[in-house]
Image (cartoon, rainbow, N blue to C red):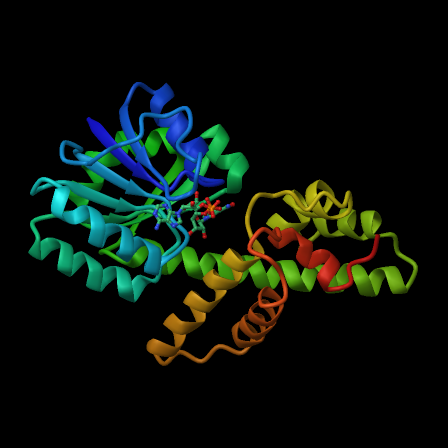
Length: 277
Ligand code: NAD
């Protein structure tokens, strides 16, 4: 199987690397200077069987496909592994189908570490047969591959997962700050969370690893997390579902995202929310 891969950023580069190491014939593209170094950069994607996208958001995915679709063979499968907007994804799949292209959404969770190790969680949306066709590829990238439902379902599930993750991160920092004000060291408070019912991916995999040590180097941008929270809340609104904590999280992450650079890591929320050191 010949694979086209567009988007060699923090996630895409290690994912593409794993596919090369697994023996796939890969052609790649990225708009950033130097981003394709070490790979075979494509002049075109005429002969790919599968086109994987690992791009920032739906707007970029649509723009890239506008440029690439004319070059793709009918029957080519497009897999958007970015964290995109589920309703836009549905509409996109219809437009691609009109051009004879198959489409699945297959966003991931597990961060840069998971991308490097091939232990991502992949949540997929699309037709059973299309997902079966790329299952061996997804198995190189992820440890868990869940078929969530029809096209767009993977993107919906991903955004909802990150809503939970973002709100949990923020409330964990609040608990550590209040604990510190009472005289409980943040390391101690986090150990309590990790041995108790307040534990989470934030307390287990972010507080000690990226926050308390001041490294803020998880590799997942704060603005990307804020985008995911907005996608989840936009979806809730489109479905006329009330969200209360979610609305607060969206307001908080959107406000803070506007004050930082695109490079600011999401774990820096710890500092921005006054987390104790
Ligand atoms: P990133 O910004 O590091 O990478 C995005 C890449 O897309 C960059 O290399 C950029 O140059 C490229 N790009 C942008 N516009 C382009 C265009 N028009 N044509 C070609 N290439 C273009 O982002 P990332 O952290 O790798 O995240 C990618 C996606 O995965 C996002 O949707 C993000 O929300 C999601 N995600 C990220 C993580 C993480 O931990 N970083 C985890 C899970 C999901």
